Image (tube, rainbow, N blue to C red):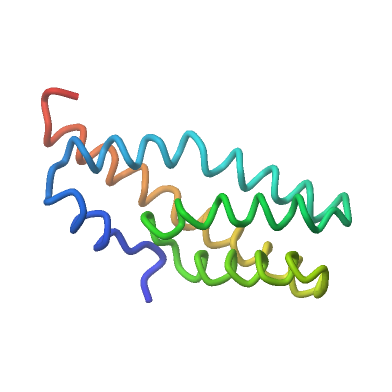
Length: 122
């Protein structure tokens, strides 16, 4: 699997670069903040309810902008936190998400820029 898969986003956008641009803009403005919150919760607390809620919130974005393994890792964190178990695995999966997000972000930004250039109304 590539680090970034935008096929689903392309499908739901009908190939409209303005739509893709808007979704990617929203993603880069909100996902890093949510991911940072999740990281703080996981590394600094044992608040499984808050971890579950934050992971669950991030899953919807990860289902549209598909970064390698991120949706699956968030789903697993969500499930483990809901059951209040698996702190070690939660930390490990968070590390995977952070690594893959860091690798994917330049590609997301490049696609956002490409869509901006393709639609002069943006």
